[in-house]
Image 1 (cartoon, rainbow, N blue to C red):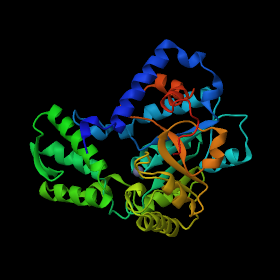
Image 2: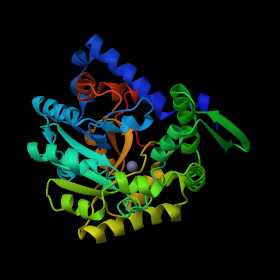
Image 3: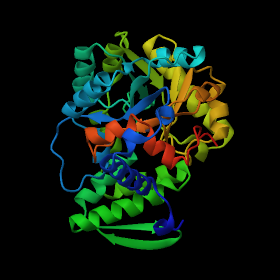
Image 4: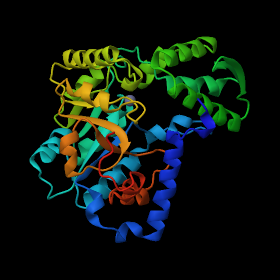
Amino acid sequence: MNIPFQITDTMKTRLLKTVLKSIYYSGTHKLMSADWQGAGLIYTMHRVNSQPVPAFAPNRILTITPQYLEDIITQVLDQGLDVVSLDEAYRRLKEGEFDRRFVCFTFDDGYRDNLTCAYPIFKKFNLPFAIYIPSDYPDGDGELWWVALEKVISKCHKISIEIEGKNRTFSCASIAEKWSTFNHMYWHLRGLDEEVLRAYIRKICHQHDIDMAAICRQSIMNWDEIRQLSDDPLVTLGAHNKGHYALAKLGATEARREISEGLSKLQSELGKKIEHYAYPYGDATSAGPRDFELASEFGFKTGVTTRKGVLFKEHVEHLMALPRVSLNGDYQSLKYNSVYLKGIPFALLNRFKRLNVD
Ligand SMILES: [Zn+2]
């Protein structure tokens, strides 16, 4: 895989940021037709906390501050949108009820700060939200390999790895070198089959004395904590596979097993039916039409991706491939959110196609 010429998610994010800025400062979002704002949107988030951010922290894009979350909720409500549960979003899509636009807030992976920092905010506003859980994570067996990679690069001065059959050594002495090495290795790993990726990261962690299970137990809620949330009708819990494997990187049998085992474990731990699903990673290289088909076998009401976009009435025919809008910790700006709510950047990124499900 030739990293420098690959259009990565990071590049797409940078492009989106540039598009957002130019739309906001040119005032285009105020001029363009309301047709592109759609019926509503589903936000993707991961972590909410106000911990200090070190100079090398590539995963900081996954964290927003509690203040930013409050500001986003306030902005959404001020603009007259309804904040609804996934069940209600499903009902509105199914019944074609589009007289009021709506927003769903969703979190992926089950980080502990969802309980300690995000939950009190949603409680205060009395608003619903959802969390998608890979079932290995609350067991303490999750492989948050992107966090592990950050920790390895953070602590070492150089790293030797095999890429495409060749031994390569990357320097990680300076902050700039750490960023460059992370970006190179992260996108290399994302291009590998899941089993190869996991074997690779386990080896690197072993070499550099990083305990992935400890990272999981430290940052992810255990089952008792998840059950506290599950008892509150404001919270929807959704399935997110067993080991957070990208379905598209697996054969059909393994992909089906990933969904099935994750779902069964979640249902038995929580004692309730789970009706919503999120594809791990969720981009087009991680979940495609075959996977939308596979997930639909499990009877979920909705399946969400991380393909960027707002919801249109046409999505009722594609309930297992819903787009989302990511709240990125790297640019926590209400200006950008006001542009998101108009749907314009997604119309441009998706070349004015309402659906992006191929
Ligand atoms: Zn995830």
